[in-house]
Image (cartoon, rainbow, N blue to C red; front, side):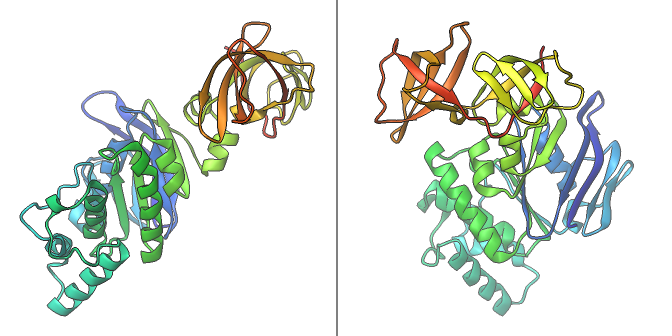
Length: 346
């Protein structure tokens, strides 16, 4: 295991800002810390880099302890690279010399070979002699990535690297960066508040909230099998619909009886809330169950409808865009929930 974070807590002369965090990231994998502003994700990243001390737990890199209470291996001895949010490119240096900055201990021939290799890898073969201000934001991002990758760190840390870019460019660049890292065989850990960046780039994602790492898992499991109510709300879109457990694998709701795994402790008769995603609600004019269109958002290939049930509860529905129904129309629907996600009623 290349990176292990074991029960790590971090504090600044007060209550912990990160509590009991655990991460396991194998060599060659790309991980992500995902969460809203102020949740502690950047603090944890800086702790892994060696910039912040731990008050509890330990951090291991390549099986060697680098942080514990009262002791921390300095950042420059951790073989960790970092791409900061502001990129911090040197404006007076050419692109080639920016990349060469981390290669000062290499001889000239090896340095030039690595620069050429990285320029090709990030798609900037013809930009070696230009300066950062002559490049687009996305190109500057690739330069910052290449500079951090140049000395072949054991672990590359990226702190909100795409936050200054247009939304449309972020996901595209995240996919490109993933391919670059995979081609170079690097292990990386990304921090972001954008779930689409996380999905596009990471193999495993940890969702953080209020200083706690709630679930470290695949994007698929975070979406379809969240273990915490906050994750169900934060990842994707959906609503919580009241229900009552009526059997070992059945919950009665306003949309009918839904079948699936029931959490331990949810006995028949228990009041629960069921997560209903837009893709769980299918438009079907031949069904007796209907809901009123309250609003709709055109997305090109589909509409995202907000529907009101007879009780007044609202749900979301994705329907192909050729099913164009006005506000106020009653839409025939059926529910197809493949992964039943249930939490105790609050």
